[in-house]
Image 1 (cartoon, rainbow, N blue to C red):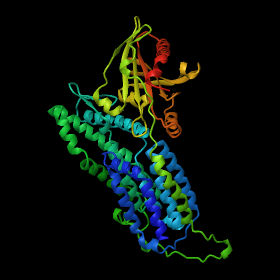
Image 2 (cartoon, rainbow, N blue to C red; image 1 turned 30 degrees about the horizontal axis):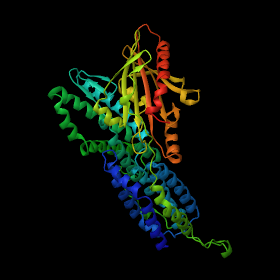
Image 3 (tube, rainbow, N blue to C red; image 1 turned 30 degrees about the vertical axis):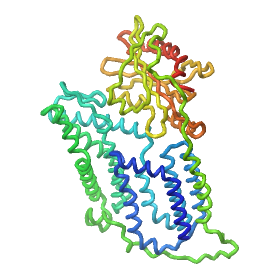
Amino acid sequence: MAVIGLLSVALLGYMYADSIAFLVGQWGSDDYGHGMFVPFISAFLLWQRRHRLTRLKPAPSWLGPLVVLAGLFLYTAGNLATLYVISHLSLWLLLIGLVLSFLGLKTLRETAFPLAYLLTAIPLPVFLYNALSSRLQLWSSALGVGVLQFIGVTAFREGNVIDLGPVQLQVAEACSGIRYLFPLTSLALLSAYFFRDRMWKRIVLVLSALPISVLVNGFRIGIVGVLVEWYGPQAADGFLHLFEGWVLFLATLTLLLAEMWALSLVQPMPGARGLLDQFRIYDESAVPEPTLTTSRATPATVLRVPAYVGSLALILPVALFSWSMGDREELTPERASFVDFAMRIGEWQGSPLPVETQFISTLRFDDYLLADFAAAGSSPITLYIAYYRSQRKGQSAHSPQSCIPGGGWEIISQNTLNLAVNGARGQAVAINRVLIQKDRQKQLVLYWFKQRDRFLSSEYLVKFYLFWDALTRQRSDGALIRLSATVEPGEHDRDVEQRLLRFAGQIQPQLNRYIPD
């Protein structure tokens, strides 16, 4: 059994070398820096239960090979599609399957939390990360303005921009608080595990990680605004560096401990004498000795091949052929650069616009077009296209539904429209229509995603076809296309809608040069 176990681990190390290297690289970033500690914490939790585990007799279960088979399916899909999040989940599933195959169901129950805790080290998919970060930016900005107004500083907010009069503070993605949310959630899970109290209290403790992170980050932004008000914009950099990292994290940890103390006072467990009595490590003396029963099965009914041999038999051929999947390169079609995009579209004359450096680093596109197209007697139409050669490893189109509120705009209505597209065999495709407002200004926005030969309005379908096309066509290129125009006073938004649809129809013939099918 030991030899087969070592061989299985060695095969997994060979299969997942690239995936683990990428994961370790993510742990080196500010957002997922806690991930490097998670395996050691899980190992400590297992060591803590060592006496209990040694008293359990190994009982290999044939459920293990079934779980291993599911993990290998995810590994193959993730490797062919080159989507690391699927590969990480498949590795975790294989670990579960091997525990079942070598030690059995009782051991899996005993090690359930340490193994489940490993999931906190896996980075979120990019589109979930972007959506969560955008929402946290808005919440943190609102709290920061609240702090400033509470202490008497005049401040206004438009999306994630805080207006202090002569100075404006941009609450960037790095200041959203997300880099404190992930480690605090991981710590809250660990605290709830050690917090020997009623289940509802432990659930509240874990769920509170989000509001605590936003609260402390909003307070930090408010203090930054005060320093900028007193000492000028140069005061922000030093303060941000000082309060990033351990200082802010210790503040969130203090609030978490205070919450645990408050929860321990509500309906305390019988015999509990305070927080320290309820917050303790696993007590093996309280666990009864396992009752070992003797199987009455006849030799003819017992499988003679151990389950771990079946798991190894499944892993071995996949490991042998994994090198061929790893060499699978993504195909990138030839295309024209947006520099050559025609600036004359029917009656509209275009003027290219630059994208600010801070947005380029956030959007991470490979090529883009931003231009105003003006025609006589109507407001200009702004055309924005962001193209991505590959959307596998952290680069993907940001949904306007996440970006629009960040600019201070409020979404009044949203629905879908039909747009006639020449490349869709003469059929109409669904695109998104969003009416937004800021103060007294209104804009109408139309947007859709062109992903290979598909026109999509749902970002969830974008992610599905990204996986499917990467798997079947070795491609993940695509683009976001967005049109917007101001609804002038006295003008009906239906008139602006028809103007945008007419313009969208006229740019279709040349789009395939820049966004290939």
